[in-house]
Length: 133
Length: 295
Image 1: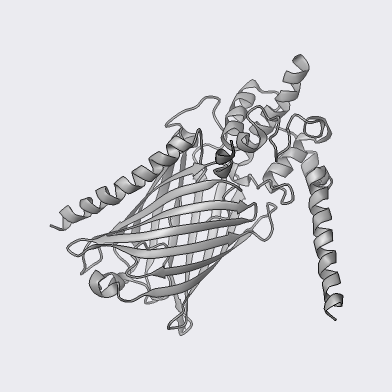
Image 2: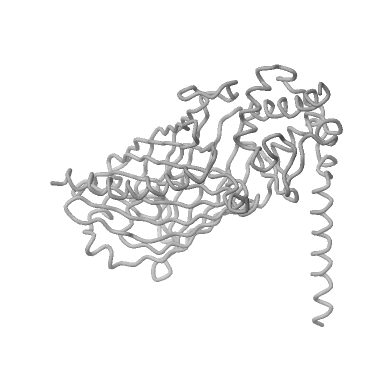
């Protein structure tokens, strides 16, 4: 009887672990609804937005993702191919707005859309910076 | 006489607060806040995981027929998980011509059942409080009103209140506006039925986009809004009669070093309310507080 009760619990724990693992490996990309994915960044390639986004990044993101966005022990690099190439700017907007529980990424909706787009503009500028090097 | 004793409290507790803040300011290399300018209303925003926020909320009032007072609390708010924030409060108050006393503590937890951003974002709130002669006015429930502030500290502090407080917090963000609604219910473990209350807040930063350079008094550093709150009676009599109601504008400003200063004049809307309250707050957020000790 007790053993029978334990199996569903074990199943739930394993399923939760798999979900968390999958989410932490970028499965969040598959969750992004179409309308978000296709959203265009109103600040794209604007130098002022890069500078402003850098300020917001330093205030809110750098402690987890590193001052140069190369990641820390626990949090991923934002210079990765996933962030710089695989994800659209709309995908990143969705992630910042909604967060990702498995990833430990909080929602940043409180920043407001303009600041979220500014951060994305800054993060995407890192790819151009890398390419220039 | 009355006027002289209140500044004496402010300076004493003020030094403690300044001392605490100074320690953490020295410990923190940089920190920042994006606080809503509310004093009673909770927004659906939780603390980011690993961040510790130090806050002090204060209210100055002069109840009709009673002595002026200042109620204060010091809060330690910590983001445990993306969906869980815990907070510990120490409360105190000083009443002119009476005394300055420590009134107790509170421990609250807020849970966000769905992390994603929705049109309305719910947060569940549970608090245990152990207070007596509390004048911090962090919520109004039941038939709370002006008369509660007429009881002398010496008598009021004998009445120990151990209470469970539950809230449903609903928050919405649209075009930079935050709209938050709180439905409050409170139960004293020793006596009485459930008491009810509400709080509603609306706010917006003066500028949504960040500036290219750090600035001090630019519009993005200010958030303005209004909040309204009051009691809704008890299980024996639900409604807005025979309880106090308050309304007032609110504003806060975040300094470049991350210290946020807020203030709000609030007005009692009926004869059960204290006619005028002045609230002010200071808060400071330390990002990833425990990781600093691992370096």
